[in-house]
Image 1 (cartoon, rainbow, N blue to C red):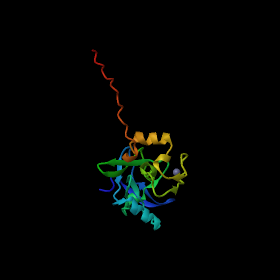
Image 2: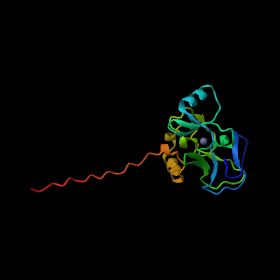
Image 3: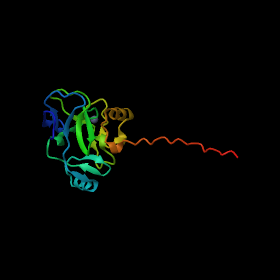
Image 4: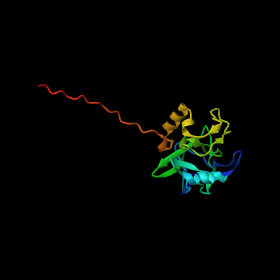
Length: 175
Ligand SMILES: [Zn+2]
């Protein structure tokens, strides 16, 4: 199943957008991104040809291409009401706050982007708007912490915490 709640995509200020057709509680799985996997070299090629395809990065060198369905029309916001949920090799859109009927669904595209081959200007209108969207590394620290607390950062971007090595003093053998 592609979407788990009632949604509609329609034209809006940013071209097309995806909108809630019902009230959605926080922390709800909303839809699955269903585009085919595409490797980085092919994404670069597509963008050089001026393709308007959307690409969702899922690890260092793998992206999901356009699916031709409603998941293609979820726009970016610097103050989003949704985020990405990575689970069992699948990628979902999940609400991070409650969403009213008629509200547009958005997530922060940079939460899965590293050496992303494309930048774009943002006019989301939020007070936190970064103006230009690129990689995860460009998200301000407080915002990263917020996304981390919501569990909506692509796992390949989240540094693994190395276990602390405890040095055990060698026992000196008394003679
Ligand atoms: Zn913005």
